[in-house]
Length: 413
Ligand SMILES: *Cc1c(COP(=O)(O)O)cnc(C)c1O
Image (cartoon, rainbow, N blue to C red; front, side, top):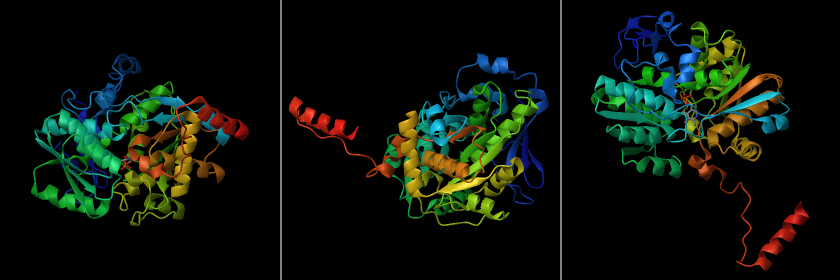
């Protein structure tokens, strides 16, 4: 490999060597990984990528490791589903679901970022990993950290969904449930990170961690036949995924994997936590922190670290943003399930519900080839739809009882 040049401040462009650092010492801007794209061009061809195993490491030259990956070898390369039934329902011409609800070991897109973050943490020589999480990251670090033989300290808001807490505990990490919201947890973790020499995947390892999100973008391009879509709708928590999908498209164009790039990038958030979309709608550069109150807990970051950059991508690409209420989120989860057979978690409901509103307001063109990033599995947030589904038909174990139900069902047909 060896195509990583170093870290660079996104604000003042000051350069740093590869280290577990994340913020510029001079201007406090966030650091980002820089690659020798000229060198990668011609080496990483479509043919080489297509010859490799179907996981996210097929794009390894564009990921920030010095050695071969050691963690998350089965993450990535999730299906891109052509969603014709849903498209017809919405009056759209060409719609795809990038289905990160399946294939990944812990059933959310966080297995992408964790594969990269923990592989890098091992390269740096850490024996302990940690994270501040809205749920899916906790699950993923717990699992991949266990397999990698790393000690794990996982910090979550105590009010997370029970399913996600249990899912994390199954791997026996040290799980710390904090009385507070994600932003409180994150603040505490910054202090912990100063004292303990751990690899905090979304603090001191964040520049590397975030690069893992790009693999969702590369996969979309490859699965569309090395073409960029006209529009992509991305759920936003910190805003990192959205910025990295755009970075992946730009890099792919720069190294010649795709020729044309004219994609509008759209941000989707829950109304109960929509600091990025609010700034987009108000056309303000400042992202005003909010106190989250939404069923979409995986997206409940009130003070999004990459909010400003996410808004910039949306503006620069001619995209837009929408937010969805809890009721709209739940309706959208059910709509996706009954049209496409895909059961998404609340974040998926946010993405589809926001898309519907973008279509209704004309901000998103029904003729645009559109990809929805559906980032987590519905089994992880079952609580959200309890009471919002129909009830099973309860019968006795005999034909008479069954036929009585059939009569009722026939009448309703
Ligand atoms: C973490 C997460 C996101 C996006 O997070 P960013 O912080 O914006 O990168 C989207 N969907 C789900 C399900 C998540 O867990």
